[in-house]
Image 1 (cartoon, each protein chain N blue to C red):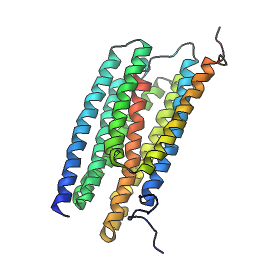
Image 2: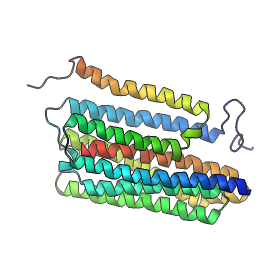
Image 3: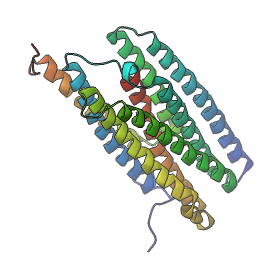
Image 4: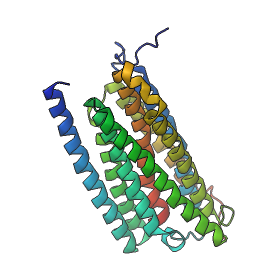
Length: 103
Length: 196
């Protein structure tokens, strides 16, 4: 392989190590916050925020989404939209009062 | 007959077919796990009482497993980087570590499940355990599937490297995309089930 290509991969590897350390730190923060036993609302918000940051790091750098082709972005965008619909359906069901009421 | 676009990118998509295939597959996986996450929300919001995961589940073990899975994602991407540098020996080390870490994850999960069964906590015990076993069980099947593919690429599948290293590198990248997705799902499962 050419020298410049190796230097390019070296840069990638440095990024992977940085992301790895960040993921470890964020995991420890997640667990530490978990032990605080916050009320459900803030606990969900914090846990999902940290998980989203971690997921974003994995997707962007390990899965190379940060430098991917447009077609992949379109596929993922449509998936995310459908995923949001999927999550909202049960919430609308609850908000609509169609959920079984407990005595 | 030669399979087209295993290495070269198609003119219309700008990608090789393997890459498009794995991303479409991952999109379907997002919907699969999404449906189960939606089920989790529905069950939790609709229940009178919902236990905190940390009162039933083993948080230190799950934290350890999170670290194991994140580490395996790094070794996976390092295996791909090694192939990009055309270093087959280093690739084998990282790929072997990835498979081994997947094995560690499964062993820890075995102990977790065994402890639950020992205390007579089954999927049928309550809705929390029902969705816990469904989500983690499905995730575990994905870990096993990923390990099988990664082990094959480490063993017999690596013969391709001698004749077509670019194609082999693409295969490892695609199996890596799946493996990272498995890691990503766990990143959300861990706080949702164990910490909330």
